[in-house]
Image (cartoon, rainbow, N blue to C red; front, side):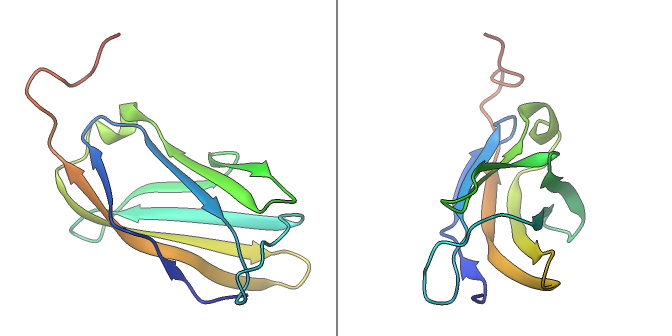
Length: 123
C-alpha cells in the first residue's frame, strides 16, 4: 500500500454537508478492492481537537467495493457548530486479513463562515 496522499485544500462553509469521495489505491496507483477492510476518518479543528470521527456505517460508506470507492459524509447539523478556520483530516484503512494499516489520505479543510442568515439553511 502507498503512503498517504495529500488531497488539495478543501473549502466548506459552516453548516455545509461535508462530502468527500475517495478512491483507495496502492503505491503504484492501482485501485484496491475493499473486501475485508475497516476505515476511519478523523477531522481535527484548528486546536487539534477531534470534531468528527467517521467509520464504516457511521459516516463512511463503501460505494464501489471493486472500484475502491468510499464516500465520507459529515452532516450539516454537525458542521453548523464548527468555528471557521483550517482543519486537518486523515483517512486510515485497515486490511483485516493482513492486519496492515495505512494512512490513505491527509489534508487541510478550510471551514469558512456562512453569510449572516444563511445558517441553518431552510429549504
